[in-house]
Image 1 (cartoon, one colour):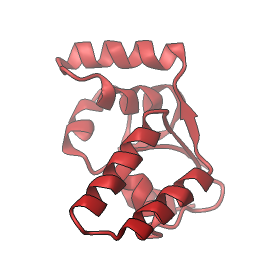
Image 2 (image 1 turned 90 degrees about the vertical axis):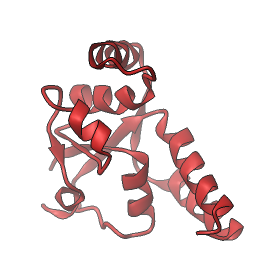
Image 3 (image 1 turned 90 degrees about the horizontal axis):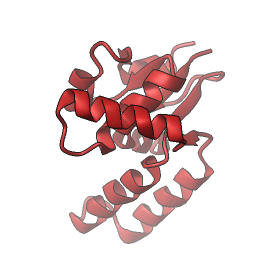
Image 4 (image 1 turned 45 degrees about the vertical axis):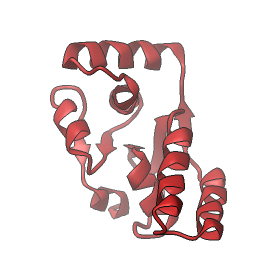
Length: 133
């Protein structure tokens, strides 16, 4: 069993069953994941990649996902430090690195900025790691 920190695109792939999570694995993410998934789905509807009904259905599926969302003081302080150390103007992406560092075995993301930022902070895995036992 492994614990994975995931970002919004990975979460949406799980919602759509593009990835099927292996039993026993646990998911964690910063509380910001709620807003990031909402924004991602909303953008897809605006760009007509999804219908309004599909976007709302996926948002409902997200509410049913078993994922531990973290936004505690230590996670926020760690995100602040990571963003500062990396010279990022926006600490929001650093929240994913902080949660991965503090609570997960791996960060799962395809985002190049997060992958680069994770060096020396937390191990990164591809989406296929979610399907392995």
